[in-house]
Length: 112
Image (cartoon, rainbow, N blue to C red; front, side, top):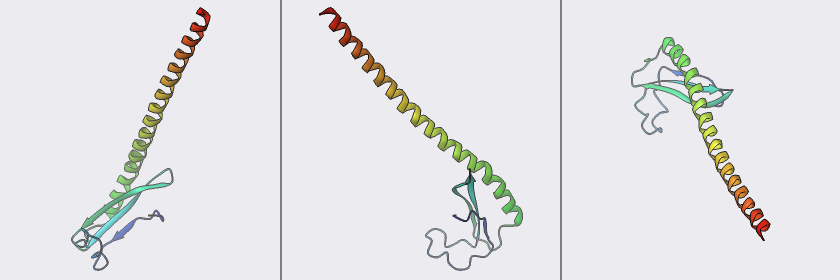
């Protein structure tokens, strides 16, 4: 994933037995999901048949990976914005409460 390269294996005869749930795969296509020069994940397709994927499958997977990565990044950014909004609302409420208490104290001093 660090290399940001697409992997396209037509014949996975060995090496998959150690990956639980994947030992039956014989073809694998993997495209990194990259947005803002950051790898967010992988678009991974597997098949039980040897040579199941073609260059057209690779082209389609690459074309799907771009908007998928952008959608994932946008969802993450939205989540972060919601967290910051909630924190800001809480701080504003705390500030308003402190101002109210300060006015009450000042008003009490004026009466005495």
